Length: 367
Image 1: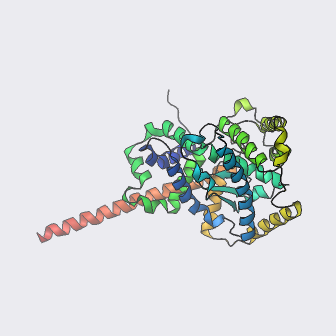
Image 2 (image 1 turned 90 degrees about the vertical axis):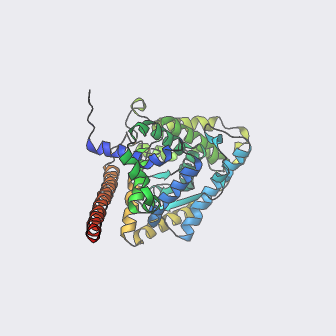
């Protein structure tokens, strides 16, 4: 029986394959490969990063508290599955948290040294606890190497489809380094991330590990699931969990409440004041909103925001539970950009071949 997939679906499957092919030669996604790719992808998002001293200092301070708690647990031997596969020292130095100017309700990590909080999500947080819970969850994905695992799953399922033409396009031939820095190259890397999703087990583990980081860093355990509750009210929890490859928000709230009940007596000693008191937190939100409105428009900013719009939102809004036409359209626009770039490459090669044949013809006349 032949199964004909809709063209947009086929295209969404092809793009991650094109990006992952260079990693097939080493057989698995190493930390070095993931970090390098994440750094390259950050170039495409840089125009949307909120480069404001107050905003950057605040989000980094929240992130550093999470990382310090994680490092202390790491020294104590905390080892959820996947964490000790490689040396993890890099996770505790040079980690960068960014506010990015996008109205989309999302946060994500590319598995390396960068984590992104969309201003659309930040402005929907009522307390720092909600923000810290989301950030702890994202860092837990890094700590557990879920991006590496997702890449490996993609490589396993797509390796058989690796044709010679696709390899040449993915690697970029002799111009691979140049290609990686272009808009099309960055779009190709985006294709990998939105073609890859975390599993139900990944999300559950990130909640559990993130909860440990969050509580040891001093925020209120009872508020860890507050943002999940908010998403339920907004209607993001309609599909039964058995029909989803992600845990339902309601079950994540329930699991968080159970973890609070299991905290040891000394957990009360971990509590610390927030980085920003409530009034200051609201002031920082207002600043982010105002700066977002005043950021100069440009093609690079528009491209960065399209990349942000296309990224997975499964950590907070499971992709199979909510219709996300804006995300789907952004992904298709990115794929169209890749296809146009590929056609331009073909046209350029054909033109160069014509010049070469013409040159060869003239030289034969001089012989």
